[in-house]
Image 1 (cartoon, rainbow, N blue to C red):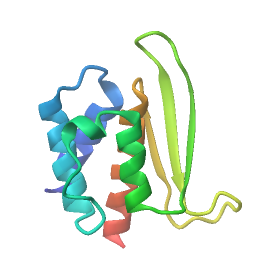
Image 2: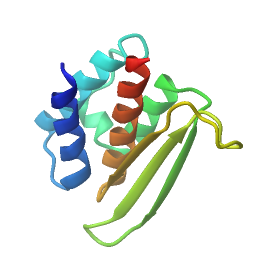
Image 3: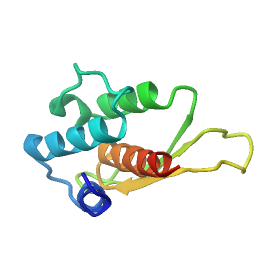
Image 4: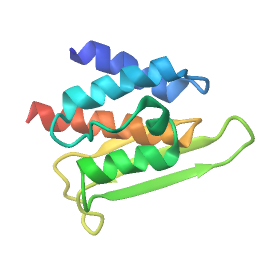
Length: 122
């Protein structure tokens, strides 16, 4: 999987509010590529489509990192932002994962993919 493919996937996560299970399967493959030793083989596309499932992915991939969620719930079109930081107490993180989406789980997954891409480049 190449960076342009990951960029397209992140854009879909951030822009769409009607992703299918098949599209979440693509996200699952991207996570498996970026986090080969940190993603449980038992995780499914159905699970990561939920907020609990997305948070579980972050918890396994980046234990003890801060997950900051900001947003406003508006019927079908929420406005969610997720920030993943190694140290919430200071402003000197080497990398930060950022994601935004109308769907909370997708904002979390976008932030996770971005952070994982940056970590893989190191």
